[in-house]
Length: 553
Image 1: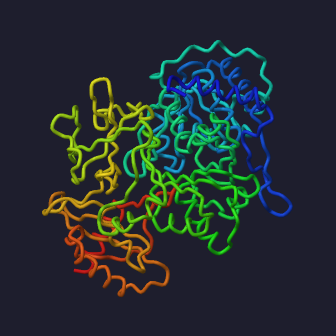
Image 2 (image 1 turned 90 degrees about the vertical axis):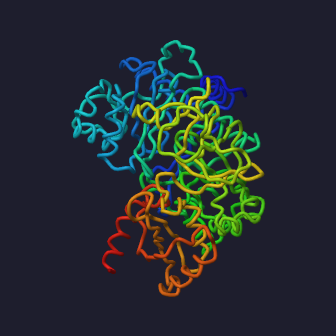
Image 3 (image 1 turned 60 degrees about the horizontal axis):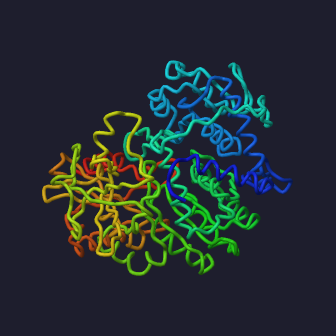
């Protein structure tokens, strides 16, 4: 498949529906059985295709058409996929956002989009009414579920049988906007990312390439976007019971049951799902014979979790640690066997975390660390072969070239290179002699001491290898350029604090990378992002550390 527009992949979806109409498209929980386990139901490709046609017809009659920005706040479900495919079929632009960021931040972001249509569950519509001024441009509102005290149709009112009056499809250019997706805002202000027809078509191809171009068969889905990509590849998508804003609360026993019941071949999951899954499989071993591959994303997966999964799963299972973002998914991947073949030891010695080689058709360059806009590459690129740490920039067919909002993000986050646009990730790293990327931390969280910069992940990996340390976080106190580095540590259950602190101080004398650290503090439980429970709130920790050290004086 050659990247052109998303219509090609939509046509593939229609082809699956025509050639294999009874093939399950989405397998989803709907209540519980008498035994208290999830009661799964399924919708076929033909049913999903016809249902999305019906929604597309009704939306068109309601004034929603090509280019209409449409907020979609719906839980992972067949309804969500029917709505997304309906919007894509008529050229409307879905606007999606992570509800885990909190209501006020979410409303602030959505206000900027000035959406003309709103499709959501009752709780979402309640927010729309409570913050009516922020949604004053909405002219079409559809409720998924029971309508409460507002007007407008419900999805159920529309039924699932199309009348055959879909508008004629207007050919799309690969650069036309297909979807607006907000970043989570967990490590910086949330931004509205424009993903084009070409971006999404490339993502489908890259996901297919990452699996060796083998049919996806059955996939376990914990991220809605991955479900869209898999449906466009003809997968049977299994949705385990989960709450999008609290993925970490997903019951690992139910994940195991879903894998075994439906013969799941591949799954995409964040560490918030994989870490509890590992714990469960260690205490309650289970044969997961169908599982062939796991792709991790959303947040960095700890190397000990990767190693643990290798121990409890079949030896042939491939486990990929992925690196990506809303702006560029995927950017790179590395398989567990390569990661565990000496690269973890290098990480613990201060090299950072290896996140693998660039994904198919993705190019990577490094630029000298700066917080200023970079209008061109002249004089800022770090030469190939250098071990200097720089900001990672990527370009490729799947990489978004602009933000819808705020406009200033385009100046700060993009670099023009002729007709090519490079995306500045805000992540720091270096590239080794084999072309592998080593992640060293977020640029905004680097510690700038009088002796030079220190990078969070690069430093933390050195200390995370110490027995008794669950995880660590480097923070800087004081003014930039003269910051004092402080290491905060979250202890493993049962660890003796003084013994761990002694080991930390000894470790600091063994590696030049961490030598400037003289202050170590134990913390009862790091502030982390709600969704993945992995992205550490270092800014909050810095304020806490300052108070702790002040109290010791």
